[in-house]
Amino acid sequence: MGLVAAAVGGAALALGGAALLGGFDGGSTTVRELVAQPSASPAVFKSGKQLSIREIYERRAPGVVQVTSTGSSSSGEGSFPSNPFPLPGSTALGSGFVIDKGGHVVTNYHVVQGARTVQVSFSSNESVQARIVGSDPSTDLAVLQVSVPSRALTALPLGNSDRVQVGDSVVAIGNPFGLNRSASAGIVSALQRQIAAPNRYAIDHVIQTDAAINHGNSGGPLLDAQGEVIGVNAQIETGSSGDGNVGIGFAIPVNTVRDVVAQLIRTGKVEHPALGIRGQAISGQLARVFRLPVAHGVLVEAVLDGSGADEAGLRAGSTRVMVAGDSYLLGGDIIVAAGGVEIRSLDRLRDLIAAKEPGDRIELRIYRGEEAKTLTVELGRQPATSE
Image (cartoon, rainbow, N blue to C red):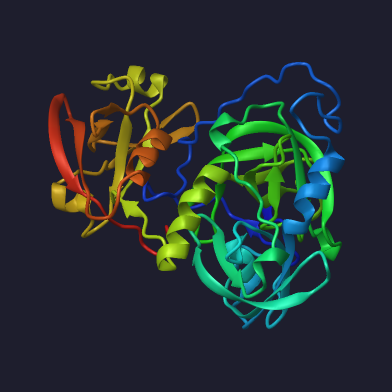
């Protein structure tokens, strides 16, 4: 089943290629499934501090925009990996939302990728040209700016995606199939999902929802019951149904959005730190079968030439083994701690690296065979793609 970008001309994302630089790795994804508590129908919010769907729509829809980008033959969603809908020289349609009175608008990178011109349409049907302030393919986010009077702008408040729980009620507002400012409601179906960005790096801590999201919703807000943005709608799972909604959508968490957008507004780009390895988490069965010196950690399976990991002397595995249908490379270093924090999953290591800056140093505690060692690695910059 393919993950497809939820915008007109959206693209399937191949879950291939992996790097600790932020990329995927088979068997390394940690998904936290929580059981939702019994609640009211997903389309009806509880009383109290929570707003009704109608109240959320009335307050927030004016801040949701339609984004239309015209690009070159390699632009927009036509350049997504494994795109089943190539649209050379075409127009891409998506959504976005206003975040401040300075005219900044958040949308998906894949909506404006390679665009020559970008138009933003407001609820008044007024369409204005926007400039791309900056974009980040590694998180599939972009910031636009429009020159309109501040009084004409409705900025949407940003919430806290760390507080989101399975079963929480949500509303998505966007432009599915060009139908302006359509609302759909549902719940948070799962947390800690992982999806692929346009450059094949992993986007972590993604929110899964059953609120209807379709092509054209890309870049639009996912709102909680207080009307605060908790995510940016980006992809849908279509299964074998084609390219429409089947009740599985994915939103980039707003805490990621907040950090990335701040950097894009400040510098126009985001520099992601990179350790420079490809790794895979140790399973308990693997540790038992091969009598590894530790039960938890990350196997170093590849080291990027010239990276900080390479300069520090990290060693990659060379012996391919299979355990319970999963493939591993043994014989290399095993990372058990980073910056003094115990490492039990690839996601955890990636989070610790992401919290740093290129040029920062991080101390790694490793096992090389039976010997425990400590190495200090200077982090580099994430390459353009995880290929």
